[in-house]
Amino acid sequence: MSVARMISLTVNGETLEATVEPRKLLADVLREDFGLTGTHVGCEHGVCGACTVLIDDQPARACLTYAIQMEGHEITTIEAVGGTDLSPLQRALHEEHGLQCGFCTPGIIMTFEAFLRDTPDPSEDDVRDVLSGNLCRCTGYQNIVAAVLKAARTIREERP
Amino acid sequence: MKPASFDYHRPQTLDAALGLLARFGERAKPIAGGQSFGPMLNMRLARPEHLIDLNDLVELDFIRVSEAMLEVGAMTRHHRVATAPEAARSHPLLAAAAATIGHYAIRHRGTLGGSLAHADPAAQMPLVAVISGARLVLQGLSGRREIAASDFFKSVMTVDLAEGELVTSVLYPRLPINAGWAFELFSRRRGDFAVVAVAVLLTLDDAGRLEDLHVALGGVAPVPLRLDLSAVAPSGVIPDDTWIEAVSEFAAQSIAPEDTVQIPAVFRREVTASLTQKALATSLARSRKASA
Ligand SMILES: Cc1cc2nc3c(=O)[nH]c(=O)nc-3n(C[C@H](O)[C@H](O)[C@H](O)COP(=O)(O)OP(=O)(O)OC[C@H]3O[C@@H](n4cnc5c(N)ncnc54)[C@H](O)[C@@H]3O)c2cc1C
Ligand code: FES
Ligand code: FES
Image 1: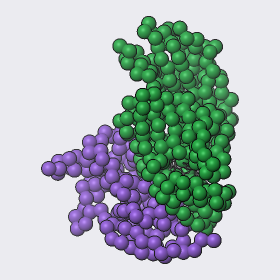
Image 2: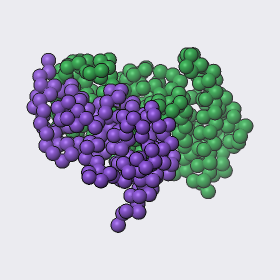
Image 3: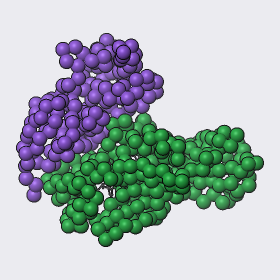
Image 4: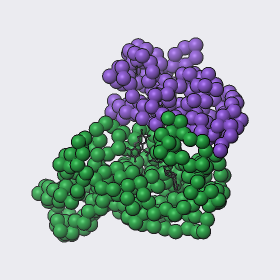
């Protein structure tokens, strides 16, 4: 039998501790132990993308990761995106009406914050390929695609 | 949808991982990217008592190119295989196929070794390993062995891996410079597992005659299916559109796919024919361009 252990994780630059069983999903520890409820949980088997966070700056499913695996890694969640201002991607989603209920939005933002950092000038096809990993039951995706392309333009223009 | 209890182990070396696997036997399972095993754990389709995490084994995360071979470590993520210039140069078919696995976030976690050990009948990496004549390097506490990919895959999600053994790397013969290659897949939605996947590798001689041709299909049988084309594609033919059609038709007739309500057998055959046609045309164009 597995016993709960104290683990220490770096989340959004802060060191946070929790006592959890090894089987506890990263998504559940973020939400229940750390109160970071911006990471949503839809399917718990990797399909919907709602739980996407960054592990060492790369997008990953928080439902296919056990929190205990993340000791020594850096987790970034939606709570770290933007600040007093919205990020260019958040602003574009707002302006282009890229969300309705918002359930899918944190996962989409985390996925594309990483993607746009690595791919500053994506084609529409690239964007649709990446967006295939995030299910949205509201928008029909068109406005999300438009928002991501707009954010890419903004980020390119704002770069020194 | 929460996994059953398990104990967690995080070995720092391959030897330590093999030691843990040997110690716990069938009560232990390794986890790599967790992109296939995570869902199985969460759905309790698997209930290991001990989970051995391979993610710290940096010694298994590498891409090495020698004169004849491309060797990729088992813990190399799909995204790296898809984007590393040395993979694209020495085995463009492998890189192109890796780029179509699942979705962006999945490719950042999922690994080559995990994909091969999991052995989904529609998965990209087993298909490419089989058509390439790749060899898998397996390691257990009692030693190292190599096995041809075509012998490794036994049936649906069943492979020739002894208890306590891990896949540590895969050896792919590099593609010749003038090789024609193509990877085509059909799925209902981008990122879903393939309904049918087709891989082609071929070479032409200086006069444009067929030298060597391999066609393999995924998603149509329990394991990747490498076709015997000696009847329709003898070496020496000059491939034209009629030839492409004949080989594609032959491919479609070579399979005996499951007949389900969602995907009738006749549909899988049609998709096989049209993807094979496209893959052959692309391969021929690439080979001709490379020799021009
Ligand atoms: C939404 C979604 C879509 C996907 N779409 C596709 C797709 O289109 N095509 C596709 O091919 N895959 C797809 N996958 C699966 C993905 O490719 C996985 O990465 C892959 O199948 C398993 O690799 P992994 O590293 O995640 O292995 P894990 O899930 O960690 O492990 C899988 C199995 O392999 C064993 N294992 C892992 N590493 C080793 C090793 N080195 N030696 C021996 N045994 C080992 C584990 O014990 C387990 O039984 C998808 C997954 C998701 C969640
Ligand atoms: S909750 Fe993780 S992908 Fe759906
Ligand atoms: S906005 Fe409702 S699911 Fe995407």
